[in-house]
Length: 138
Image (cartoon, rainbow, N blue to C red; front, side, top):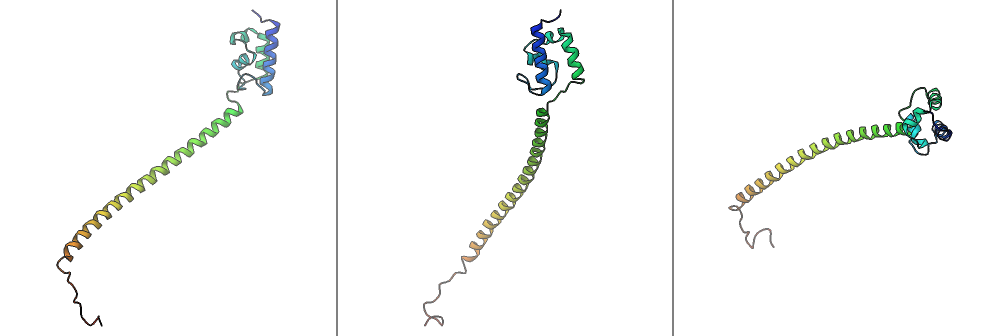
């Protein structure tokens, strides 16, 4: 069953907008689904408009699955994922260094505490009061 002249006109206008890269209702990908959306008709209506489908197939030999914006978006996502992987790896490395430094610091702290205990234990018997008179006083 063919489509009405009004529907065919809507499809031609939609096709012209998509091919010009100026879509109003879609992301601009050159697909028959977007042609239907751009014309605000059903996908089945597009396929009933045989003349439009033939013209579309002649102008769009191979459907473009990604628009330039989608390509840019995908490249940006890939770059951000790469940067994220690098950052996670660097953070992991820094966390390992921090853990090692915390261990060394804890060991040094406990060694310091033990040395202070030993020093305090040795010094108790050796302290003596100095006489009030002597060669150092005049």
